[in-house]
Amino acid sequence: MRALQYRSIGSAPEVVEIPTPEPGPGQVRLKVTAAGLCHSDTFLMGLPAEQYIYGLPLTLGHEGAGIVDKLGDGATGVAVGDSVAVYGPWGCGHCHACSEGRENYCTNAGALGIAPPGLGAPGAMADYLIVDDSRHLIPLDDLDPVDTVSLTDAGLTPYHAIVSCLDRLYPGSTAVVIGAGGLGHVAIQILRAITSARIVALDIDEDKLALAREVGADLTFPSNTDAVAAIRNATGGVGAQVVFDFVGTQPTLDIAQQSVAMDGKIQIVGIGGGVLPTGFFSTPFGASVQAPYWGSRSELIEVFDLARRGFVKVHVERFTLEEAPHAYERLHAGTISGRAVVVPHAEG
Image 1: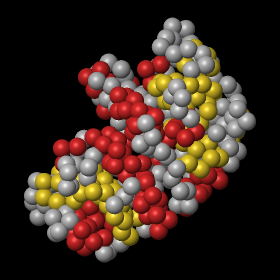
Image 2 (image 1 turned 180 degrees about the vertical axis):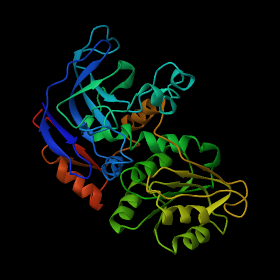
Image 3 (image 1 turned 60 degrees about the horizontal axis):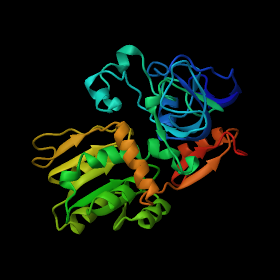
Image 4 (image 1 turned 30 degrees about the vertical axis):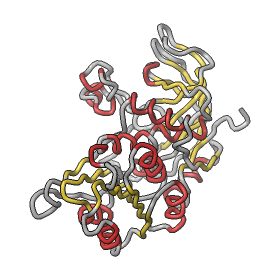
């Protein structure tokens, strides 16, 4: 089968031929219908050798959807022909967090060598994908896999960050979204769907600010040195009750630190390498800082329900598997509007 693999440190990913995998006991094989690209992929491919921990060669793609193609011995819960999406943050299935469906916070995954597909385990940028357990498959039913595969990360991650702040997103509150790209434009839609907060979006790209307005932002400002003053002015000097930073660089974290309200919350979602100190004389009184990771299985079900009801729609650019290396080049250059999705079997 074909697979898009990262094969050596510092090199571009390439499409190669590898053996088609067979599902082991309890495993499920999918014929991949869609696989999403993510900035996390470009982040790991940019790591130096001493920091890279994901194994080589690595088949990329931690956002995946497919048709159940073959069941391993003892696999239950799905049937051949089912259209499903993959819940990516795999855990042990037995610890306290996993028992609650919060496998994104599994306490045993690292010690047991359990890794998400595309982030250690073979990913979805291939003709076929092995999923370790059917509990990591969420029914898509009537949802289009290409239009919705990105929700497994670009929807789940902001949803998880937002629902943990619902107590602060009351009527009259303000939520700031820094970065209106792949995750940010979905976050704006989720905020619009499940809260009554006023939504302010920041970005350095005017096209992405236009997308933010299109999907529901009340106000948009350039993400520059004037952004803090603009947010303070828009909130009567109070600041934002919650700031969601989907970039995570030092300049964006500085904006978050200076624009959050007292007793507010900063959610650092982006992995841009910035660091935000917190405490007296650093952040406003009562303000907290959190770095949420992915989301729970039940939250992913809820995200798909929002999509079924038309509240969330990902702006997608489609690519074939052979075009995937170019898609990553564009993602790195910041020229993808919304989310890039690879369709391995473009002709069905």
